[in-house]
Amino acid sequence: MTVSPLRLRLDAAALVGNWRALDAMSGAAACGAAVKADGYGLGAPGVAERLRDAGCRDFFVATWAEAGELAGLGAPVSVLHGVRAEDMAGERPGNARPVLSSAAQVLRWRETGAPCDVMIDTGMNRLGLSVQDVADGLLDGLAIETLMSHLACADEDVPLNARQRDALAGLKGRTSAKRLSLANSAGIALGPDYAFDLTRPGISLYGGVQVAAFAGRIRQVVTPEAQILQRRRVRAGETIGYSATFTAAADMEVAILNIGYADGYLRCFSGIGTAHMGGMTLPVLGRVSMDLVAVGVDAAPGLAEGDWVSLDYDLPATSALSGLSQYELLTGLGQRFDRVWG
Ligand SMILES: *Cc1c(COP(=O)(O)O)cnc(C)c1O
Image 1 (tube, rainbow, N blue to C red):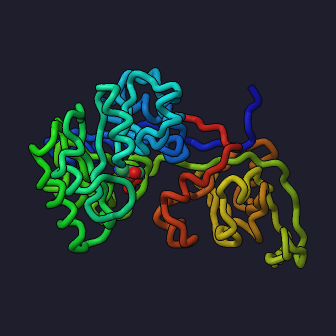
Image 2 (image 1 turned 45 degrees about the vertical axis):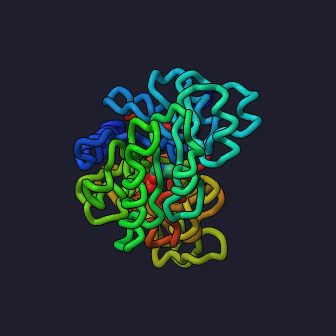
């Protein structure tokens, strides 16, 4: 196997610590894990195995292909997009069950007699059956493990949160469901009456901090690292990179790193981003290219071609800088990284 010149350093202790913190904040409710979109870009099997070993028993993916990646997990996986006609004909791992969200899906699944979850729409108007559908008996005869809904504005203090909570609470005992579930990461911070029986954090497992309650409790998990392709001397008055946006004020030492915006190291870091090596801070100089970025290494005389540096990738700060959500910052990290757990 070839070793990539760029890698994502994934902090297993931080991932597990974040899950434990969210589990504790979930009170008596169980704490699951959303591992859709390949574990938010970290690699779903690597994430799920570590959380399973820590005690997590409920995993959430979007599609059956994603469930297939976790067929050997030995813990239940819920498929949030439910079950299409194509999925009924395809391979469905024994540890996976659909989260049914339309009348057609219910009809399709009822014949199997197998357990399922059900999504109820309580105000987001994304996926889910209505409260009225439940009253009309649409779910009668289904073996439901978890009846769930999803918060539209969990990271905001708005009346819709309580309305959604109350709508789900009103369904308690009205179906065969063994458990109710509502809260995503930010929903956990809304308090104990949002936890129900099972919480479903995603982004905060991976270091996302969207609400004040998580500051200091949730740790960074993902750090991009890149290898130095070339070290060069730039003379006073010369420029670096596309559009020549950086001009050297004096002779300086520069390292060219094997990472760029095609890897998710965004152009907004041009002239602003920083890298680290040991205790030294290395400033990004000029534009970030598709596959390359220049950093100043005057502070690091020993750094040479082939050495590795870490790129600063604080999720809240990068979100503010880029205008992108913390979710996009993780799922946008590209396929050229080796994902390395440590
Ligand atoms: C993605 C997702 C989650 C996790 O949400 P985060 O905001 O990442 O914590 C939970 N439930 C459902 C239905 C989801 O789609």
